[in-house]
Length: 116
Image (tube, rainbow, N blue to C red; front, side, top):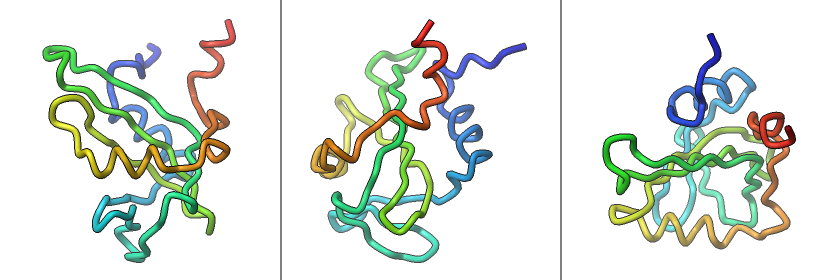
């Protein structure tokens, strides 16, 4: 039975972890921090290689976006950002400041579905 990734963030996270995107990031002090090394990344050091948006099934205001990330020093991981009424506006601004040339869908696991 195929997994419907469109409805479950954890399914996407697990899939990307299996592809090597295992680092956990935390937004703190205006930076995206690798929770293991404690290195704090600036927007110009971040490459978004896929993103997936979600609406809560029981509450449409429960929205989030999963960013699949590679860094300039080759660290791979994910970051789940809530948006909508309960959004962390500073974290959202951080992701807006990532240069557009560093945003792609090259690792998006839904590319096959979109091309059909």
